[in-house]
Length: 126
Image 1 (cartoon, one colour):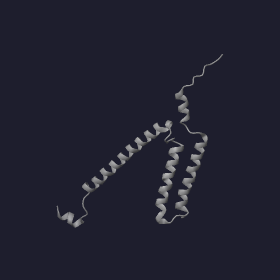
Image 2 (cartoon, helix red, strand yellow):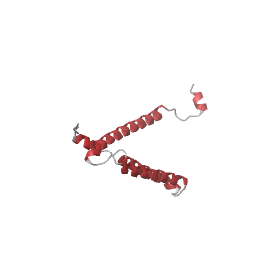
Image 3 (cartoon, helix red, strand yellow):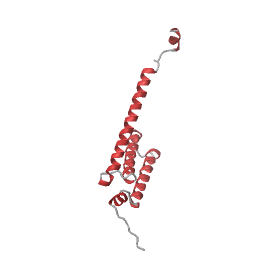
Image 4 (cartoon, helix red, strand yellow):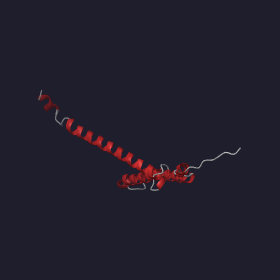
C-alpha cells in the first residue's frame, strides 16, 4: 500500500528555524568557556580588582548573546524575525516593569521614611 506524504512550506520552514546539533554544541561550549572565564576572573585574580566588575559584565553580555543566538535562535534571518520581535517586546516590557518598580520604591523611600532625628528630639515632640 502506498502512502502519500504531504510537504507543506510551513512544515519545512518550521524545521529550518531550529538549530542543528552542531550549533547547540558550539553554544554549549562557548557558554561553558565564558562561565569558566567569569569564575577565573574572580577566583584566580587575573584581572585587577578595579576592573573585575567590568570584566564580569562583559563576559555576562557575551554569554547572553551566545545563548540568544545558539539556543533561542534570535537573529536577523527571515525565519527568525518573529522570535526576535517577541524577544524585543518581552525585554521592553520587563525593562518598563523594573524601571517603574524602582521608581515607585525610590519615591516611597524618599517620601515615607522618617527623617534622621535623635531619640531625645523625637520624644520632646510628644
